[in-house]
Image (cartoon, protein in one colour):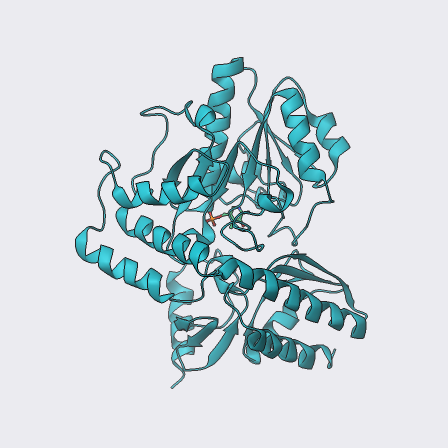
Length: 397
Ligand SMILES: *Cc1c(COP(=O)(O)O)cnc(C)c1O
């Protein structure tokens, strides 16, 4: 019997259709590989959308979860949580930030960042200064606040009215950003490299110039590193490529090596605008997820994962660029580290399905950009296998 088909059929009745799901039922993962309910094996170059940066079921993350699960699963943030403190120490010691607030997802981390920016501005400049400038083609999550911040019309349609106080400018366009600055603006929120919007790398010097504008007009600079943070681009945080620090930064996806977690990091002087009662989360930074976060961060910092990401990122970029020379329907290969996009002159959905049938998992953003975000522990041999599968599909187009 086909077990996957059975699950897919059962799911159709009881799971709300918020995703257009592929007919695949993963039940086990190890490193860069996934197995489905019928025992088929897949090379996973989607990695749970840049969540499984350390590969599936990294033994140190699994051990941390097992050990913590036997001691304490949850306790309230009314108390002090050692694992949360340890994770905050690791994050602040390795970034611009002084303090961390923990939550459960990327959208929640951005909610916290937007609230903090408004509160800080309220205290410094009064109630008239609350607008946040974000980028077109950005993605910041699915809550009402996060879709309000997201510069894509399609995520807001049908959900209006959204939260007022957001203003969108083309990503990478400095003049447009400066024109959008008014006395009502309190912050600029950007992904250092856009993920869902098509793997868009800003022009050289853009973040630096944005920082200068923020300083000139007294605005907070917020980075959404939910996707690009935690090693994805070859540095621990993507902003470290440009050496341009923000005032607030959000993390989630890969932070705990798989389990759900989110974090908002900030400079002490900014974080001070939050006090007891101003924000919170029941589950945020609970002992179980924080223990996984500590284990994942230590692997990332201590085991040359970033070096591998850098080297394998260059290798995959090279291999994809070589294909661009052979196949005229490939417009551009771009990205940073192991966050790569291949823009096509056509829709990429069928290629994703064909790749899945041949045992390779990738996805497609904005209709025509194939996205490659394998685990950062990927090997040269695994990249060769992935490229071979892609090549066999491209040959037939
Ligand atoms: C995935 C993503 C989010 C949303 O994260 P969730 O955990 O799904 O809420 C926000 N920002 C960016 C840049 C993302 O890639």
